[in-house]
Length: 178
Image (cartoon, rainbow, N blue to C red):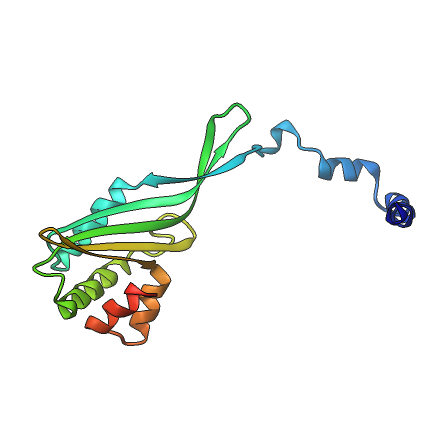
């Protein structure tokens, strides 16, 4: 209770500062219907990017990588209005999921070399080219028959490993445990 009595005079004084009119305060605080602002409840969501997926798959095929399936998706938030409708989707990043058929998941040197080729191909799709202002994640699954090797790491971790000059088996190991 004591804190309220100490703050009350400060608040009353602030309300009467010269040069700040009540109309100005009202204009700054009031949300008008034509302000272009939508009241939202934000909910995490993803959206498939089939055109970008096709473009990336084509770029990787042009680079000589075969047996690949690419799926790009935007990660962000839906703006849900008071009526429960989705007003818009705000993209934060694009995530890439790549599946590649390989001869063996036990040949770590070959997997590391393929991993580097995939990352080099994805360099052509940074934020701004791919939707969203932030770099996202990369998921790579190498498949050989019924065996799989799965990796999940940030675009930044992939770039920093390559910037250190890591290749082959060392790159695979580095991105297994970023």
